[in-house]
Length: 621
Image (cartoon, rainbow, N blue to C red; front, side, top):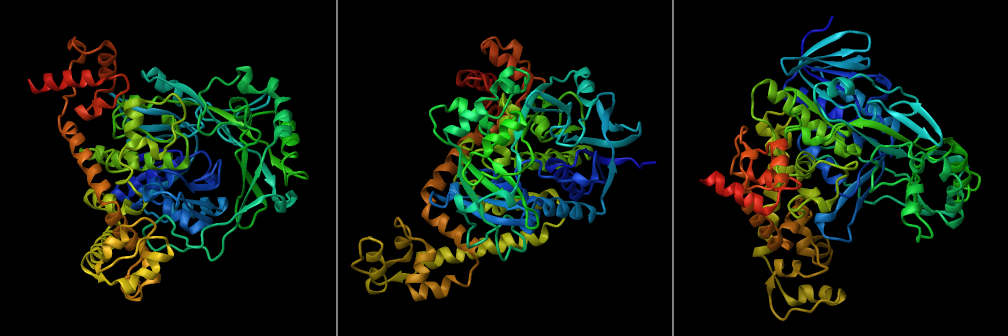
């Protein structure tokens, strides 16, 4: 019935969609298996993409040829660049999406790809022969053969939904759980665990009084995510902000005795950085209120997402508490919030290529690895799809360094450190934040995708080359052009900066605090006439390069020092247990992870600097 595929992707969430696209664009014939064709790329939780550090990931996915940024640009209802008051290393794009349009656009792009086929069914098992994964078995008992398999099961593996004292089997509201895979993998020797996440209630926006809330408009300039030419919305929908109160907290506490979290019925590890509302009022009992973001679900729906009110309390408690929130006095609920428990596999069982150590040609991506968030899932899916294709063609895996991408930081953290809670990306996790900015992801990564042979990168590389060339032109203009006191002192005085007494190079003005290219363009006619011929991306790249040159050079020096350790390779059969000078914990961790380099070994939790010194001496000897 089925041909033999190159790659089978199990699950069509954010990880699965990017995995399928990546493998197909590398040249593989792909089968995407999903339990429900109507929920491909569904935004199960917040209808938004990006945010702090997450926005950088979406831009990196786009720079490598993925679709998440393109889909988001086509379907956004609001765009904001977060942290603009801080340095450019912290700027993070975020967009509210139309939930239904987002899924529809993803599906149409997948269906337009002639290398991707679809099958609607549950996958209940894997075909494993001689330690190699070579297909899947579906709930109907069908066997589909492939040279590699990528599992992106999300929250569906033995998923269990909690609402108060009620427990419902399911991977998402209204959808059944997936069974069989966990049990088989455990039988093959994998370690499994349980995690939990939650989602807020969905509200009827027609019943809310938005006049009682703070309005939060989108940016006037919509930058977007994709480096390609994508449409931007001509108008945007506003979000709103409101707050809980002591009264709301007291009402929520009336349901704590029925809370699955506090009663111990939920055993899974929960997200510390995105806690439920009941968890927040317990952990931060001194806080009089908590912020709630009231976010629209799309252009043509009244459904509202209450960001900040994730809950697994009984539905009547959620209802009564929300009606005490300003603007929610006459609130009508579409459905209550709930918590969901699901199986995951500690990611220390993976190699940096996302391939499992125990079974060859089997790859994991997304929440199955203990992560949370669409963006974290999507980038793992992309890397798993790329490496599945490379593996079946006996090519070296594609591994991004921590100095090359937030994606590299994420995967390195997962494989070397594991996770005791749902992993979420933050800028603080990256050592090289000035290098890993949202504005230069294409400069960093598109050449790598081109070298890999990713389909459709030629036009992207032309844009990268033009951006680099324009940035260099702008830099030379500022470094070589002088400006006289009478041309600039009026502007300098207006911003409280010291006037100049003689001609100086433009770059010296630009390097002053509070000065940027846009402001100089408005203040000085000949500067404006020159720079307005260039696009905003090129201007930003050149400005950051000039203003932060010293910091960028320092980070590059740090990268070079670390890369010396990355260059020291460790053999796959290195017997760490025989090296008695290592600590016992180091011997155990190193034997389990099997790092490829000294640099990777240095990032394994429990391996100390003294252990690394011992390893270096041993390797050099």
